[in-house]
Length: 146
Image 1: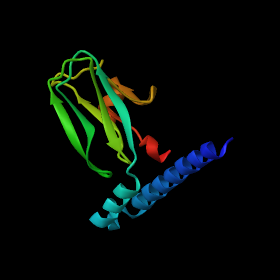
Image 2 (image 1 turned 30 degrees about the vertical axis):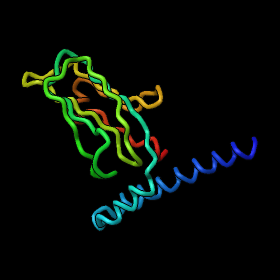
Image 3 (image 1 turned 90 degrees about the horizontal axis):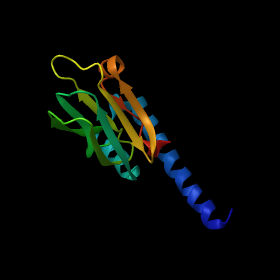
């Protein structure tokens, strides 16, 4: 392994460790976190990553998803009303912000509704049918932390 490769790996490991420690600290002390602490974590974990959300099935009344706005632990939710399925969207998220897509079934329900979240060609979360309805969609841990 040459020096450049080792330095790159150390940098990635350091970033992952810092992000993991920040996430653990926030999880343990979330009740006592101030806006300043959340902003500090946002700055420390400013690395971006892309995910692709997909929703399939017969119909959905709405699709809600984290689109990249907001703070790491308070992401803004975007939505699409009466989407045409299959539906697909690639977004850029930041730091420890969790990727999430939540298809909302129409009034009659949709047993065939399914969602996936893909990062770098690998499915990192998926749900369908009853599982999707009880879990509230697909939610994954930010790949930046791991």
